[in-house]
Length: 106
Length: 113
Image (tube, rainbow over all chains, first blue to last red; front, side):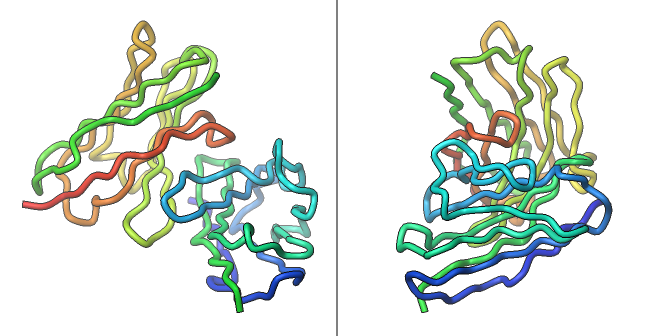
């Protein structure tokens, strides 16, 4: 089974910061990588698909990138509405979520 | 518009069987895949399985012995059945289309006597 190692598990940050969350895949997954945002009491929301593509309606301060087996979600100029838990998902072989990163105000 | 809604019992006794229904609208089950994802309280997301548009299924290897997903295309419903429930199966169960833009609101399932 493919494992997704997500880091950090917790990320304190200030408004206006630039933050990066990373997932490392245990096997090649190509660009079959998505990022989701989840707020308390809500269903996950797709943010990035195909490793680098912004989903509909997602602000342009969000971006995704890939370097080898490392996939990153970057948020530029953090806003209060961005405080949430973020999960990566590989869907190259079955589906595996990362453990999540809780983005919170410092 | 595309909608998915989960339904089922909120409380299940240990060792019993869970049966959930995902009722969809705005799309055809023969054109899109429907996945089930669950989330224990305060924990992360776990992919459970999928019923493909063609009707085949795939399951998380850890759950495969206990899990079954089926559908009734005429009713636009997808069914999840999981047996031998334990307390660690407590959580929110979501259905979604292609693990992409469209998710149900989730249904909370508590396994307790």
